Length: 99
Image (cartoon, rainbow, N blue to C red; front, side, top):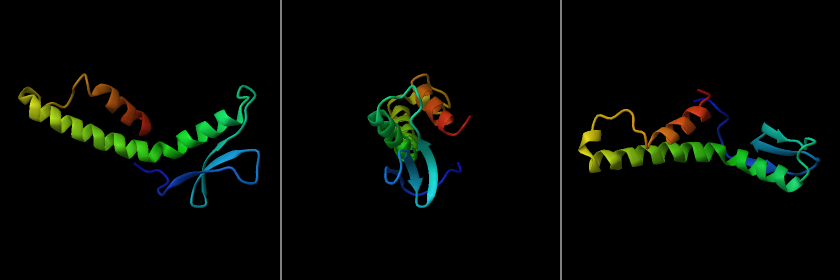
């Protein structure tokens, strides 16, 4: 999956806007729309966005570990490509990948 690599961080300097950056690349700008009245909400959104690449990678890794453990404990899942318990994780991964 292609996305801007590197650490994403929140930048609150020099503006009323809060930005999410990776090196010198702007990933997102968390402006203050009329329906968001709190700068705390704006900052929380920026931190959530900045954590996205790490969360994505960790979710893929956790899914693989959980699936491996499930197959070890449940021999009937040995060749399983689909599991109802796995569906929410796969949906979240697909959403992050724009599918």
